[in-house]
Image 1: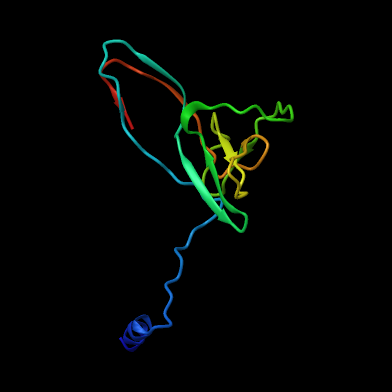
Image 2: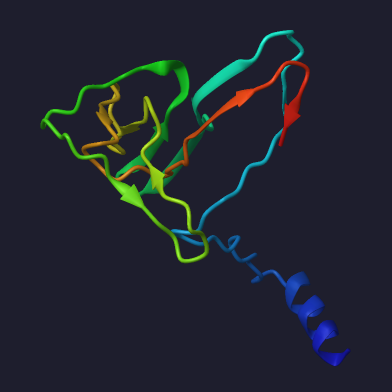
Amino acid sequence: KANRSLQERVRKSASYKPKPPVRALMEPLSVEFTIRNPLGIPIDLVDLQVVARMSRTTSNGTSLCTNEDAIQITPLANRNDQRQWTFHSSKLEFSVPHFCRVEDGESSSRSKWKSAMEVDPYFVVTKTSMTLPPGSSKT
């Protein structure tokens, strides 16, 4: 109880600065949703993946990694390999999302985008394929 009141007094003082939120690197983030097929025919879903936008602030400015808007940037170097990532808390294999690109963090009037195949992306995904029977739903 004494420790709690000390923390409250420190928090009220003028020199108190809140600590930034704790974030972990290289830890998987799980997203779950339900998909429903209201049609009377089966639907084949191929390479289903999350669409995301993540930013990072550095001394050079803010850079961005996104796979929004289906814009494909061809890598400068011809890379035939598909990089894969695994994490200690999961048995799944993760890869670079389709249409993923990274904006450089340089503060200039024009953004320079690179393919995520050339640089390390800020996020990776698992890609799922399935057939959804008529009138069914899956989570």
